[in-house]
Length: 165
Image 1 (tube, rainbow, N blue to C red):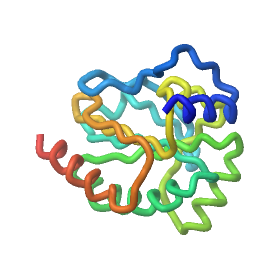
Image 2 (spheres, rainbow, N blue to C red):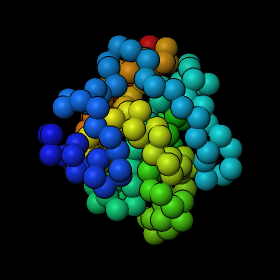
Image 3 (tube, one colour):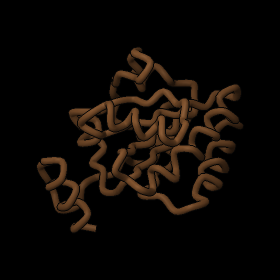
């Protein structure tokens, strides 16, 4: 695990402040952020209270991200009417890299851009992709590091449970 943190720090130029970086804590509010979207609007996490929110950090160079994003877009389409929001936060330094990947995958999701990686630093990413699911009260309920094929079934179960509350 420490090697992953060090590699990400070297790639992104991050400073490691402790041997064990803190993940968003279940039962606590996640770090807030405001990020621009592909469509040109700004999204502020705190304004989504009342929604179940899945925050997914991804990058164009991340193979598992390419596999996961279409499944996340499908979850967004299926569960948006019930109060679900997907925040697909791209951490590439260039928006064009992110947009090219979305076009190649024929995805319509309105990506958020963290080109300076300030939000990624606040969430102290250890792996890519990195997913946080937040309940309607604005509290972290699930944290997922990485992606394995089929994990979207687990996400859907967790989302459905939170949407019922």
